[in-house]
Amino acid sequence: MKLFKPGLIVTVLFSVVLSFTFASAQTPEKDWKWPSMLVASAGGVTSPGYVVPVAWTPLHEKEAGVAWRVLGEPSTLTRIRWLINGKIDFWYTDLETGDDIIHGDKGLITKDTGPFDLRVALPGFLQSFGLLTFGKTGIKSIDDLRKRPGTTYAVPISSSGIVKFYEAFRAYLGMSEKELVMVPFGNWGGMFRAMGQGKVDLMADDPAGMFVQRSSGSDRMGGLVFLDWPEDDPGNDRFTEVASTTSMGICDIGVPEARGKRMIETQWVALANKDQDAEVVYRLVKWHADAYDKFKDKCALCPRVTIDAFRKTLDMTYVPVHEGVIRYMKEIGKWTAADDARQTYNLKILDMYKKAYKEAIAKAEANGIKISPQNEDWVDLWINYKKEINIPRVKIMTDKEIAAALPKLR
Image (cartoon, rainbow, N blue to C red; front, top):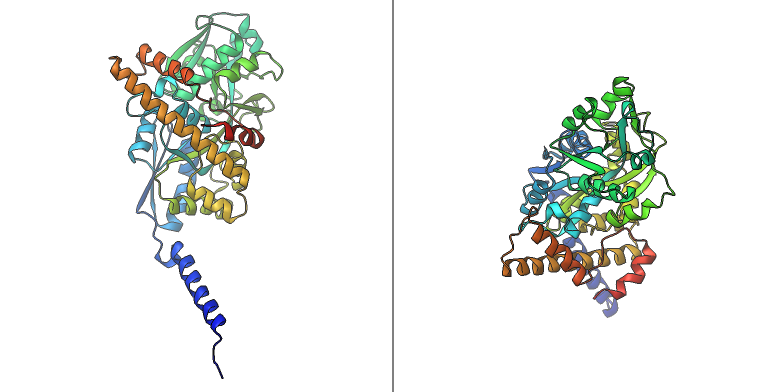
């Protein structure tokens, strides 16, 4: 009597090989070790991108035994360099900054920066961002600004996203730089002091921000006023031409003066370099899902740091997604063929911008043009070269639009 049938032996051997291969592809839990330290960064210490990681990282330190550092840095350009050079692992910022980097907006086009391999890596949150003034200015609506040329607008000059928002808002109003006057500041505290002293008329900020909360309910300067953004204004198309990745919504967070007002909604995430360890990213995303109930009350924005909200961000992202995120989303059944198409499209667009930027640098150097954001010849060369090669603009797209556009990319 034969103890084993030949077919059975083959089946058993195949199963053993398959099991070994699968096991080899995964990191055994007992062998997994977190890095000794992880570093995140955001804007200044009052920014929401700083507050959120400061809120949840102590819990992760305690549970995982990894040391976290969270660095506050107002300069967008400095944070970009940190991420490129590996000084930080994660950068909390609004997703629109990813557009600024890929598209190569004016303040970010140095020789050592420009478009690079950035990725969406960790869950963030939805933040409202509105225009505000004080009652004594007499400004009650956005339309009032068209009637008073010379209005001064405070801008933190180190934030490329806020500078772009000013330029987009000026286009929305149809006003020149002399009619809506940008007043540059080094930090948010300086802007609020200037507004409180009547030295500037207008600024944009987070309704849950520290300086906004301090001014809420006060009679100083006639009280805080958030302006309601009209949904049907013809200027909205002009705004979108400049800020193509901006969305709008009704504010439901922060001070009472802001709630119910229509304003900008910004999707915040943590960005990483493509080379960031995929296992680390995967485990951090998974930890966010598993530990939500433990950290959700640690700060005002923490309740918004959910996997469901993160999933919605991925539905409209124009920044490629990190492999560690994709692995987790596939594991929980929340990554589809449409996501694959979006990822492919976004990677192709990013590669096109990276290639174009290198070509533009070569053209500048061949013509003796200094590569600096302050050099208008270089800025004009980059802008005109993008037009010359007809490179697609980074923008929010639906799955249907992605499916239609992807086959047309060269």
